[in-house]
Amino acid sequence: MAQFQLNILGCGSAIPTARHNPSSQILDIRDNLFMIDCGEGAQLSMRKMRLKYTRLNHIFISHLHGDHCFGLIGLLSSMALQEKTGSVTIHIFEDGAELFDQQLKFFCRDVPFDIKFNVIKPSREVIFESHAITVETIPMSHRVPCVGFLFKEKPKLRHLKGDMVKFYNVPIKDLHGIKEGNDFITADGVVVPNARLTTDADPVMSYAYCSDTTFNPQIAEMIKGTNTIYHEATYSNEFAHLARPRGHSTAAEAARIAQLAEAKQLILGHFSKRYRDESPLLNEAKEIFPNTILANDGMRIDLL
Image 1 (tube, rainbow, N blue to C red):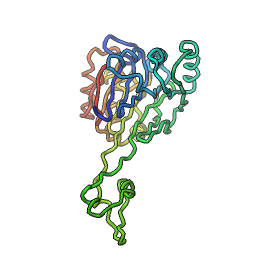
Image 2 (image 1 turned 90 degrees about the horizontal axis):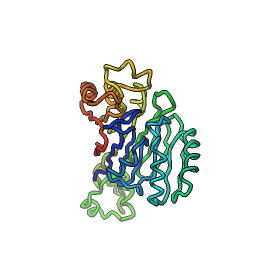
Image 3 (image 1 turned 180 degrees about the vertical axis):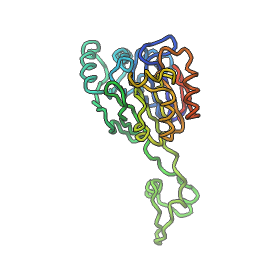
Image 4 (image 1 turned 135 degrees about the vertical axis):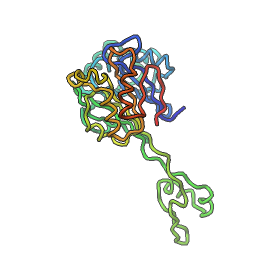
């Protein structure tokens, strides 16, 4: 299994269709599950994709439109019936925390795990940090307060050259510092450059979720250099006149964001129900950003 794997639970927009559930996905980082948005049907999609409730401890809600949060109470209720333990932290705007707290008190009185609310704001800030990753909110341009989420691995340690470590008789106590980039000083005072003892660290992974939003070049600046971007592509160019008034983007605009951000890969999603075939959106995006793919319910993507 990849260390960073994206699981698409739903990639439709406001109205569920026979092909697409509303927005929801799970980012699997070394078997730790992070849910991003929780539209209707999210818990059923989790079951179909064999994603374990026990490994889900964080849920990030981008904004308070129903197609991004109507699945939350049902999911938490099912998790309670499955006797999940530990805790679940819901990262959400203040109004949402108050609303869902009342619903939980009514529908889920006896939950065997702790439910915590981390109130977020429509600004750029780190809202979660572990020993391995950070999660940062990215302001979107939508009809209501809305944020995207930028997941970034922390810098990794350099790799030791075993033969050189042995040659210079490096003590065990110095190995961690050398992996962090320190030079080694021998007992005789000779400085051994770090590059002689190590090779480069593995590259860090990053993933940006950008939905819902109109075209906004400032988003590209905030996520510049991100490996993989998921960007909403509600409309094709044919319906570009609908995009901005409704707070959405076209596929071509999503591709432009990926291009400006110098990303490696673009995933399109949040498709309007009008499309029974999203290939026109894919074609439009690929003209600008060739390494583009379409999201689809049930899809697993090993992130670049």
